[in-house]
Length: 187
Image 1 (tube, helix red, strand yellow):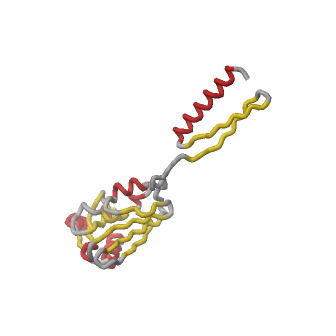
Image 2 (cartoon, one colour):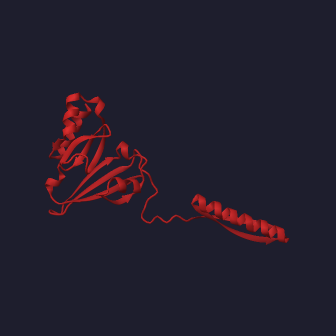
Image 3 (tube, rainbow, N blue to C red):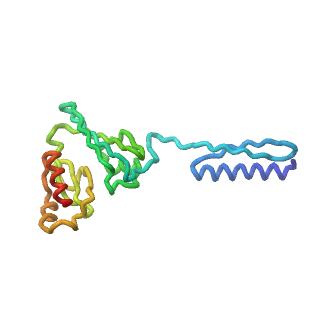
């Protein structure tokens, strides 16, 4: 094999490593010399290190599990639901930025577990309001902060009187009351 052939193989290997790095993986290249022929052997090696950040994204089939840990009583309230529309196609970093008061315990395409500590039963009070033209559920008594969930109920379907009431905020004291009110808005 001449000097020119060795340079071409070396240059080719550098190009492949560079492209592999850009695509998120590297290709290991071994060169075997048999009767002056060059045989290239490729092995894909995944170089992503998760650093506990999932590359998965939320789909319409993703189960969302919300855990509320009450520090006073030691109880954990668990709510499960499929991902709401506003969460679709979001990754773990998106969720952590949007829901900074929550800890993301587990994140896969199949299931996302989020945990939040609350101090006592009164902190589980919800307020219904409006965000991005949808009925929104907020923790506590303040609208616009501590978003729990953005529902799929568009306010354009509601009577003008209900929209005005939602703009002021509708207090909700129990989970049953929350379900009842959401059913009322969606019917």
